[in-house]
Image (cartoon, rainbow, N blue to C red; front, side, top):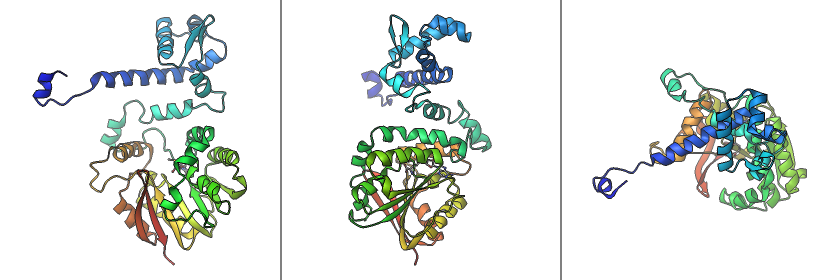
Amino acid sequence: MDDEELSKGIPKLDSTEFWYVNVKISILRAALELHVWDKVAGGTTRAEDMVSEEGWDPVGTTVLLDALCGMGLLCKDSRGYCLTPLSDFYLVKTKSTYMGDVRIAQLTWEHRGTLADAIRNGKRPIVKNWTDSEMEAVWAGHSIPCRLSPDRYMKYYEALWPALGFEKSKNIHVLDVACGTAAETLCLALQNPSSKIALQDRPRVLEEAARIAESLGVSSQVTYVPGDWEAVDFGGDYDVVLLGSIAHFYGPEGVTRLFSKARKALLPGGTAIVSGPLPDESRCTEEYPLVSAVWVYATSEEGTMYTFSEYRSLLEHARFENIELLEYKGNKYISARSQK
Ligand SMILES: C[S@@+](CC[C@H](N)C(=O)[O-])C[C@H]1O[C@@H](n2cnc3c(N)ncnc32)[C@H](O)[C@@H]1O
């Protein structure tokens, strides 16, 4: 962009960066699909050995492996290619810290450019419905960073519960539906040893959450409700039900089923907290929720990113009242009281 273009009011378009990021993404996807890090970890360290074992193209194999070196995902020593600390930790399939499945799921969310087709014909989800059980391992993989550094997450959420209107010292019984890492509720357990937390998610995700609870020393306060939220019995007597980034995967009927089930699990006057990306009412200004809405469109049958007023009417329909919008570190939380 030269001064003349700027003076003519031509907006700057960073096409080199766009091209470069896309090339790197494709390199990563190819390397994950070809399992190159597993091969290096398994002792196949030279391009020519990979080529003869797999029947791959020699030139393509070499440029790919060299590019991974440039990207810091491989390096070279006297035996050929070797793993870097990063790829050894996250990209070797046999390791409990393997994040390759998560990356593949993120890279293939719209099946290589078929988003436009889905918009033309309305056929969704494009690849997989991310609330189905077959996505369990991918969701479990999302918890690995929290399992590795739980203290960082605890620090992030340390002032959450007072911001949501709960005193740190109050005994509360919380159900965390589709909890994922459960960082928010495990933080409460850590801060308040008399609080009790029930974690609900698919079994493999709960295994990760249990490891995080163990490392934080709060296991005795935690119980588990494994399975599909639609199928399991939530139990009752909760002061709070947390519904974090789950409602948006469902259409209005599914959301109403979720909210009604949450209300039945609460004590009269108990609080449901709904969190997740919330677009502005005109769906125009804030990028993150609007971009996330396209991903939700492609990865669910009927999901959408609801605005605050849409959630408010769905919550009222499910017999909640005193519905308020709260914020913590820029994240939105909707608090709703169950009717007595
Ligand atoms: C976007 S994550 C949200 C995690 C966490 N609640 C948060 O706010 O960060 C979605 C979670 O929902 C879980 N999930 C998706 N479908 C589910 C279902 N049908 N039943 C139970 N959990 C489900 C996934 O396993 C995943 O942990």
